[in-house]
Length: 258
Image (cartoon, rainbow, N blue to C red; front, side):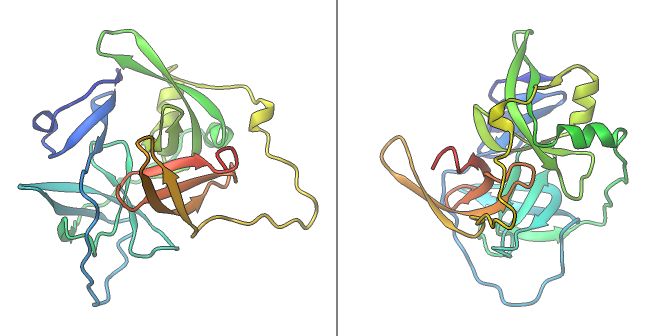
């Protein structure tokens, strides 16, 4: 069964500064929260490629020290210091400069190996990528609540998982969506004109925004700066953005919002 939206305290999750805005099955749909901007230290020695590895490290923030374990999904080509990580028990994908961020201490590659698994329905997996969906979660009161979103891609490394984002929470999440589909908790929406990519002229080159610096105006009048780190192949107007003051990965349609 899946539970959704609610909040958990740090004491409840065992992680400092953690809150949740949705809960799914036994794992909360939760995010590490940080109120501090990233700080950096420069390390020059060469390092092994840790993409695909299981890691653990201490997260030091304020007076707390917490051990996080997870799987390194990707190293961002436009910023090789930045890694995308799926931490155990957390459904968001995080972007951290593992070797530069002073809050990350004692990064250790674990001997654990990811269990090999195959998709049970490749055709269905391919069919849902790029599609608008309704994803059902159970509330604390019992009835299910609908979260509209978009399936962005199959996740790297953890290949039975999918990248997905939601209209009311536009950050990058990961779920095993084939299971939810078969349980009746994921519905693929019919295509609309809004979901049909614009036709391109033969030979037309579409500029990518990957690697570009962006600025986002906040409701309080402040500004956030960040970098576009990825373009979604199934929806070329949709990009992943990593803001300087956050380690969540945000997902925006930069054509609609420009």
